[in-house]
Image (cartoon, rainbow, N blue to C red; front, side):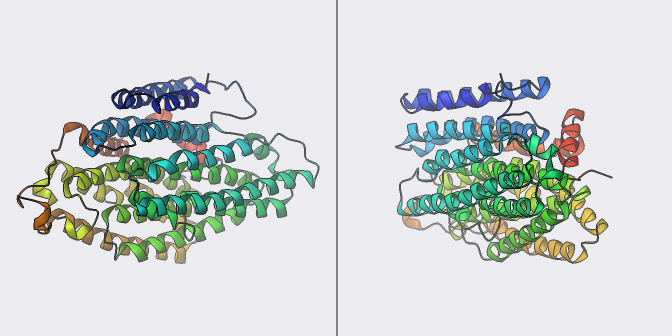
Length: 484
C-alpha cells in the first residue's frame, strides 16, 4: 500500500529514540534503503492509496518523493560516520527525529487533501525543530525558537487560506471533496474573489516555510545551527515540500482561469527573494549561512519560473531537482569543513584545496553547479526560465533576474576562493601543527555521497529517462508549463 512509505519511517523513528546509538545509526541507513526501494516501486506501479480521499500519487508528488528518498539514503550513509566524528550527546533524539522528518516529508508528497497537506507540512516543523537544537547552544536555541515561531505564524496563515478556498466553494454552492484533484476539476465554478484571497494567504504561509523573502528570516539561522546532515535535508528537501503546497494550489488557480493573478504574485515574491539573497550573500562571513542564502536565491528562482509559466515553468522544476541534489552535496561538504576547521567563520578557513582535497573537489564542483555553470542542470533550468521570460514579454523582470544572479555569483565566488585557496589562519592555540587540518580524515563515507549527488545531477543534464521526462511534463502542464 502507498501509505506504508511514510508509515515505515514513522515506526522506525519511534524505535530509534530507545535503541542503542549503534543500532540507531544502522536503522537510519536501513530505513533509508527501504524507503528508496518502496519509492522506486511506487514510481513503477503508480499504486492507488487505501485512503483515496486523502492521498494520491501525482506527478509533482512523485518527483518530490524520489528526490527525498535518494537524498535521505545518501545523507543517512554520511550521517553514520558524521555522528561518530561529532560524538553527539543526544544522538538517539537526532536519529529518531531524522526518521520522523523523513516520514512527515513523505506524507507531504503523497497528500492530496488540502487539510492533510497542511497537517503534513506542520508536522515537518515539529519533527525538524529538535534537529536544529542538537548542539544545545544559546545560538541553536535562538534559531530553533525563531524557526518554530515564524513558521508557525506562516502555517497559521496557510490554514486561513485553506479555509478561504473552502469558502470559495460554499458561497457558490459547489459540492466537491477538499482534495486538490477534485478542487482542480471544479475550479471554474469556485468564487474567484475568495479563491484569490486564499491563494495569497497560502503563498505567504507556505512561502514562509519555503524561504521566500521577506518571510525567510528563520532560514539562515536554522541552516547554520543545525548539524550538516540536517541542514542538507532542510535545504534540499523541506523547502521543496513547502513549494509543493504552493504548486498544488497554483494548479487550482490555473484551472480556474486565474493563472495570470497567481503568476504575477509568484514573480514578485521570486524576484524579492533573489534580490534579498544578492544583498546578504555579498558580505556573508559564515559558509553555512552563505549556503542558506543561496537556498533563498534558488527558491526565488523556482517561484519566478513557476510564475512566468510556459517554458520557464519547466525550467523551474528542473532547477528544483538539481538544487536539491547540489545543495545537499554542498551542506554535506560543509559538515566536513566544520569537522576539519572546527569553525564556521570563513576567515578561519583556507587552503582547502591542499588540506582537504576530496572535500574541495566536491565543494568546488557544487559551487560551480549551484552558480549555474554549464553543464550542470541549474544552468539549463535558468536558461529555460530566462528564455521563457523573454518569450512572454517580461523583459524588466528578466533583466532584474539576470543582474541579481550576477551579483550573487560575485559574492559567492569571492568567499569560495577564500575558503579554497587563501592562507589557513587558524589560531595557533587551537592547533599544534599548522600544516595539517585539525584532527580530520576524509573517510570515504564522508565524501562519496557528495560525489554521487553531483554525478546524478551531471548525468541528468545529458540523459533524462523517458519516465522522468514525462512525469515532469505532466506536472508542469497542469500550471500551463511545457517546452514549446
